[in-house]
Amino acid sequence: MILSSVILLFAFYVGWIKWIYHRYHRTSVMSGILSNYPEHKRGFRDVQETSLALDSGRALFVIAHPDDECMFFSPSIIMLLKQNVSVQLLCLSSGNYYNQGVQRKKELLDSAAVLGIAASQVFIIEHKDLQDDPKAEWSISLTSNLILRHIQTHSINVVLTFDGSGVSGHANHIAIYKALSHLAVTGKVPHDCHVLVLNTISIFRKYFSILELPISWLIPSDLCCILGSKEYKQAKRAMFCHRSQLLWFRHLYILFSRYMFVNTFQDIPLSRKDIKVY
Image (cartoon, rainbow, N blue to C red; front, top):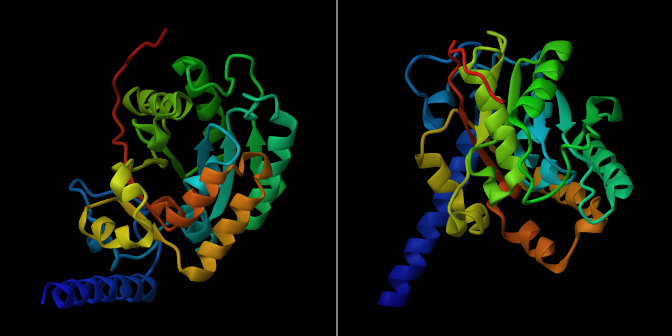
C-alpha cells in the first residue's frame, strides 16, 4: 500500500514536470525580461503570457572565472540566444589560482563558442587586484567601475550575474554582486538597463537536478529559463571544454546540478542615492 502510494506520487510529480515543460516551451521562453518592470513583482507563472521586450537587445553576463558561464548560467545564455538577444560575457579574471590562466582563457572561448557566443563578444579582464582567489576581497569601487564602463561602452540593456550569496559562496562571485548593487543604489546604472541576479538555492534543491523544476515554478522570480534535453547536451558540451577543471566531482555536478537545467533570477531595484565607496 505504501509502495503503491509512493509510486503514484512519483508518477504525479514526473507528470507535473512534463506539464511545466510543455507550458513553458509553448509560450515565450524569455518573457520575463520586460522593457519596464511593473511596480509589483511578477512571478514566474505570471510572466509566461507576456511578450518578450528584449528580442533585439544586448545582454551582459558578468562572471568571475572561466567556467562560471556554463556551470551556472547555461540555461539563460542558451535561451537568450534562442530569442535573438545579443549576448556578451565579461569575465573579471583569467582563473589563474593554480597558474592555469592561459589555458583557462582558451577554455572560456571554446565554451562560449559551444554556447553560441562569438569570441568577439567575450571580454576577459586581467588586473592585478582582481585575482582568482576564494579569500580575496575585490575592491567594490574597481569592480563596479569596470562593469559600468562596459555597460556604457556597449549600450547594455540587461546585466545578469550572481546574487549576494554567489551561488557557491565564492568571495569573487559575491564581490560582483556587491559592485552591481553599488551601481544600482547610487543610480549609476543607465535607466534603460536592468540588473538581474541568479538565485542561490539550498544545497538540497541545488543537487535535485531537473526534479527541482516544480519548486522553481512555484517560487516567484523575475526571469526563469529552462533547458530541454537538446539544450542540456549543449550546456554539457560547454562544460567539457573546461578540461582543466573536470575533476571527478564536476562530472557529478553536470549530472545532478539544477543550474545545468534551470536558472531563476530576481531584479535589483534601481535608486538614486549618493553613496561613496572607499
